[in-house]
Length: 549
Image (cartoon, rainbow, N blue to C red; front, side, top):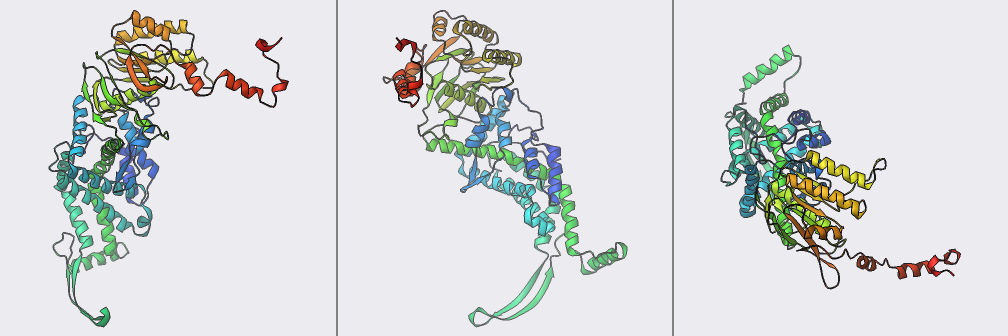
């Protein structure tokens, strides 16, 4: 059996839903497509994930679906193609456990960045496969008007893709050369030779030689047919007597006339049945090319904006360091403010870092950026940083947004305790933990107790952890007397105008600048009181106790 061309795990893994896709391809070959089901089959949503990571613990909080929709697009020669976002998201959510696979993915991206010819070949193959898949998804008018012509065109697009893979990727340095090897194996099969002969016969059944004499003004004055020569070299050629006997037998035995079109229909179905496995494996390759094209084009767009992407250096014991890290979700936001990169780094591979500072100072955005850098880097893809050194982990646990539920029995603290318990119940070692505003749902004294509990538990599993808090007094006490090893502190940098620079410095913040933020947003007593006094109903209100008497 022909191996599956695999650019993601390099182990001939079928990432789509094989049985469902095979059924849908066969159905589409009859002219009946199911677009939604086809996309679901290509995304492989029913296949088990070959990864240690559980997206339930990080995907929504990192807004990974938004990153895929806004950032991972594929454009070729000015045409924006509709990508299979479900497949792209599934790949990002499932980093491979093998470091060797990560490095092979990185090698493909490096080759695309340094070899323009290889990149153009990937673009060209992607367009061919996209057109082929689109015909399977939506057979359209061609299938309704002439099913034989539709089938022939499908097989022609498949053959063109295979032929291009053999030639265009033969000299690739990365594992893109796998495409050439697999396509060459397809070419050597008897089924492929049958397909080649069928397409040649359909397009070249014979040659007609004519004499043409032109008159004044381009008018055809005379046309004489000199010779009609059938393509006798083709394996599907039959001598006239043999073809006549076939038709006579059909009339006598089956009661119908066997036309040349009927022969084509039987041959195309037979060839498809023989080539179905190869077609299946080539079709599922579309998603693989899609993610590499999308990543490459994201890097080019970012560089045009003055932002650098990089491929991460991963190790099990090295410390995390991200230079000029930025949040990619801000690239496509409607805000006119420029994206501001920052640099963070740790001295130890397994450490806990507490972040303090004012609201809107960039703490949550930083946590989100770190999480996205980890999931992208460990997947073997570009990281939103000029350079990246990451710790290889087996799980990512993120809590940045709070999902309210109208029927939830617990209050905010209860929900937070539930997320803490579920995180430690599911945690794999080593992991990365990212928590925003831990224990903000209760008073500082009781929150400090829960906070201390979390820190002690984290020390037992030694993750790489980043936690924000507004308990500044408690954070300062922790800085003076750390209860665990490898506890670090970062604070938001504030300029002379008491505004955040979106950079981070060692230490604990002195204030959350709540009053400054309230004044900046116009939430002051004098302003609001003046507005209340000028309200039409002001005279009917009771006077405040402080102003009475």
